[in-house]
Image 1 (cartoon, rainbow, N blue to C red):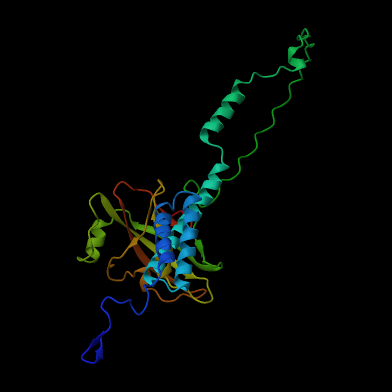
Image 2 (image 1 turned 45 degrees about the vertical axis):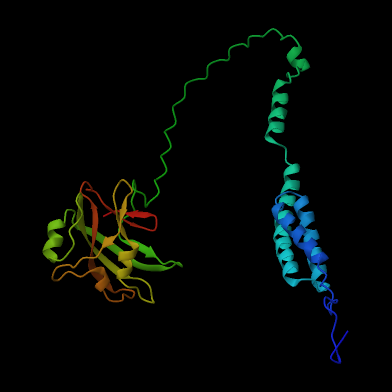
Length: 291
């Protein structure tokens, strides 16, 4: 068509390029959605997931809409994992006998009558009374064997002092003796320092003196005894040491110097126990030590 000497393209003519094909991408996303929804169904979900992933890869290779292909791959990948686990679980469950089958087998076994053996079916022979044996002559009773000594370190048989503590990796760390200074020491602890905390209602302080001698060539800190040792009662209850300020001339175990073989230090520890407790042991690493 000519208009004033210029050529005018016809209206509604064909586009320069055809519409982008999307068949594989559409199929992939449909299969991916179906696989995602049926992923827990053994075999079916797995097959649909494989088909969705395959179509998604083909769609990407052929240059079809990338968003649809990638979405199909994601859905298919998730469904592939879900379908794989559900299929394996279904196959494993198929080989396991159900509870009803097991119960049926047990019931059949119980219902089967026992088979009588020839020995049981045969008539019992007449019992023959054995001749009485002569009574043995009376002999002197042997003295009872002495009971084995109880293991040391228990509540019934606590280990004696001095107690020798072992290191975590072996070797003797220190030797220690102790005594109870006051088994009802609430007033004593308050007299040491007015800022010491009161024992809770129903409880009391117990103050213990500990004398420690070093055995480790590398040296040992007296504060180690405060962490190692706890106060125990005959019921088996154990109580860790409490931080308090002691009176003049009395040192806490944490205040002692490093002890080498032959050097010693005497310090004090305080424990909070029930008011009813009257008998005490030291306890360390599964062993009870007598005072």
